[in-house]
Amino acid sequence: MVSGPTVDAADNDGDPSTDQFIILSWLDLAGNWPGNVPTTIAAVNFTTTAGFNGTTSVNFSASSTPPSFVLAPTSATISEIPATVSISATNANASEAGPTDGEFTITRSGSTAAALTVNHTTSGTATSGTDYTALSGSTVIPSGASSAQIPVSPIDDALVESTETVIATLSASADYSIGTSNATVNIADNDNPPIITGLIGMTAAAAQAALEAAGYVVTTSFQFDPNATPGTVISETQDPANRTANLVIATAQPTASASPIPSLSSFGLLLLTPLLGLVALFRKKR
Ligand SMILES: [Ca+2]
Ligand SMILES: [Ca+2]
Ligand SMILES: [Ca+2]
Ligand SMILES: [Ca+2]
Image (cartoon, rainbow, N blue to C red; front, side, top):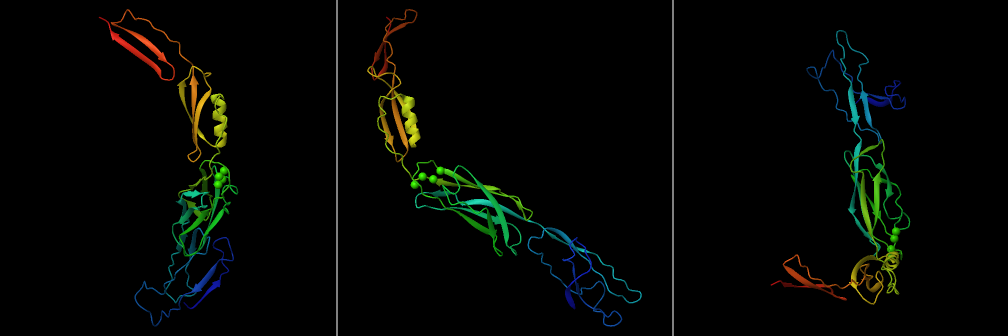
């Protein structure tokens, strides 16, 4: 290269500050021609500036040519394809216990020459700033790197909660296109519900509501009980560590009856026994 780059008075791209030129070589065509035409007079590497996307042209011209010679230039085009960025959960299991961080990772395709800022938003059932330290909303993939990590740091509170989600979603930008746009980190809870007392004798609905409000998942089973009002709780178990509770609910005492069934070839006697349910005894008709 003889000289440059030098700011050019031309404006080929709508931005007069960016046009530059370089002088590659002076050739003495009358004397020491370096070889047969076409010939290589220089190899030039172009690097696009950070944030450049799209295409631009490189034009060639000769400041003078000797008689009977012309330069027949063809423009070159430089294209920059925006990186494709994706997000994944490289540790999807965060926990209040510890606390133990989760982690998102943003990766990019293509050149790593320049740093790339990737913007993102958060959603999910976990509350930003309450259940976990709020994410900044933008992450820089440094120059020379093809990925960057985003830690998700749970805040260990005393609330009984279910496992909650943090969803990070990449935001659109002219600087990149988006591949996988979102990922989820789960935050496990570590708080046990208290034992709830006084449930026996309550209605099933009231007892279930009290347990669920405390953080239990409630199952129910049923039992004949001649001494209890149908629909009331007659016994219960609670397992705070597993957040489960089972309510045993009294059902109506069925009316005992016994009748032969003459149209069939057998007759039966139905015995209804409290607590043990329905027992049917049959005897073959002779
Ligand atoms: Ca929460
Ligand atoms: Ca929480
Ligand atoms: Ca906790
Ligand atoms: Ca909690």
